[in-house]
Figure 1: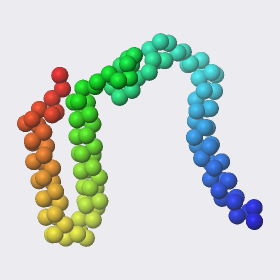
Figure 2: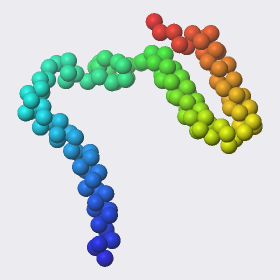
Figure 3: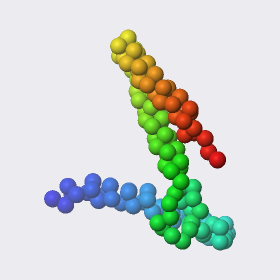
Figure 4: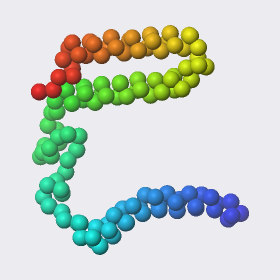
Length: 122
């Protein structure tokens, strides 16, 4: 019965080795090579393109989130283009026309964003 749990135990051990191993190796190498030199700038928190500040309820500029959403939108477009390009011979003319309609809708959306100034950053 315990031999049935060996793959689970092995999976947990490999996961821990992959997760913890690089951190331990990096720490050991920094101690050996002497590259661990923290200063105020390295230790300061930095997240999402904004400097750290005191109030967590401070309002952010909406343009940052707009750019993030636009990035996700066009990233998903690429996620649909790769499988289509690989299977282009299998999907035939109907698949080609469908993807061209998809791309036209995305280009129209991109032109609309460009005209509205959503891609401008001050």
